[in-house]
Length: 554
Image (cartoon, rainbow, N blue to C red; front, side, top):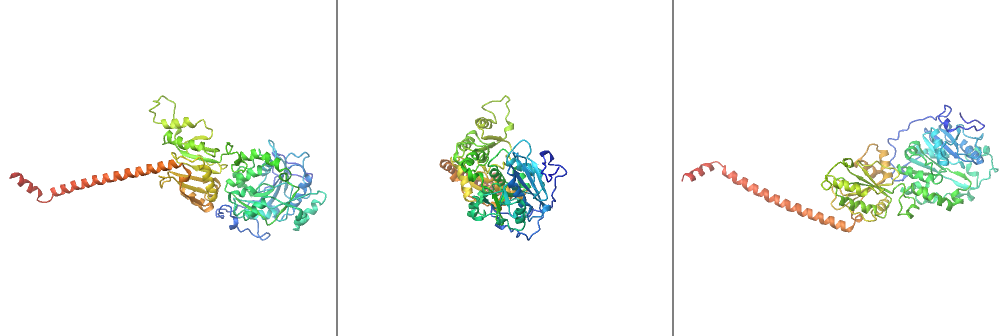
């Protein structure tokens, strides 16, 4: 049943009740949406505030734990929003407050209060609970201490009408909060009249640290892969489809879950847009402001295990983590143990140990029946499996493995190459410097078919390309990546051992000499055949047979 004026709760089991509001839905055609390159959202042209007609529905989900006086101000500010009320719902999720929360009288007309679902706790778990109970096409996360300006929801929703792979982030300022200084009724009136900016003194307010990154990178237009780092909760929105594709919030992360979720969203090819046309007041200082060192210490192991480019993780380069830095693919089926060992061992012993290697081959053909051990037709394949099966970083696969969206890079390495100890790190550094979505580096002896080419794919770039061109593959998919993230070609020699390059060049030269000798021999054979054919033709010319007979008679 719905929440009443007295604040009666909906439990997790009531999420699907008939009384739960279902927002109107108008499907929007995103088949021709803009193709944003990297994070340069400058090509997007949102309408001016108040000068457009919204059509998409939004669910504002508010995880809350205690502090009912702050929640009352948040709901009061949401009651004064400019976004159409029939397209907006507010879902407050009580995350185990010491005293159960209730809904205050001043609130949006379509507001519900839920109890966080059993089996977990924390804001991430509470947000998942609210999402599951909501119906809006767009999800807007709002912390229970965020007093928002009149156009806060409308301003973010403009971007979501333009594309379905965007993330909008609202602006905020931190202020000291005195619950006795104002009433919810006063807040609602001020917000509704467009005077939310007068509720607190901007001169004494503190900006959030993300503003430095936003300003440094031209409102994130040049931030590229770093863009997701500023999406850290409090206020932000994205399409429900993008939320689901990213897998929702990780309920196991009590702190740092917003950063980890932002990373997974970025891996889906998302564009991050800081919406600065309106603002909000953060009622009180954040935990990272008051207990920064303790918060960082807590987050380090949890976030580092899940986010490969987390800066603190790089301080532990010799460690293996839950989510590897790169998936490395090698086709080993037709190669000798020695060739495979040359490449695989160099990768495992390199300066980037947190890699996951996929060895592709016909492993199902290996059986344990009686055979001649030394004359086994699959001897090398069997030896490769036995050599590397004990390393937890190595996987054996018959087909190309599916894409793990959590892993930022996918690297194809030709068997027989001898990677330098820093090859993976150098390839990633190069692709980041070039801001490319794909780096291709042919090794000596590479063919036009793509054999012998180091190929590093950025997961986020390929995810966006697949989203914009469903079904594209091969060269067609690479061309979409070129559109949305650019590609880069360079020689592969810097990434393999120098002696291996010299050996490859020597082998290449020897092969050319052999081919030249074979061609010359073939020319001589064809010349001899032509001479024999010419003699035969002279034999069978008119009158030639009679002359031969007369010679014999004489």
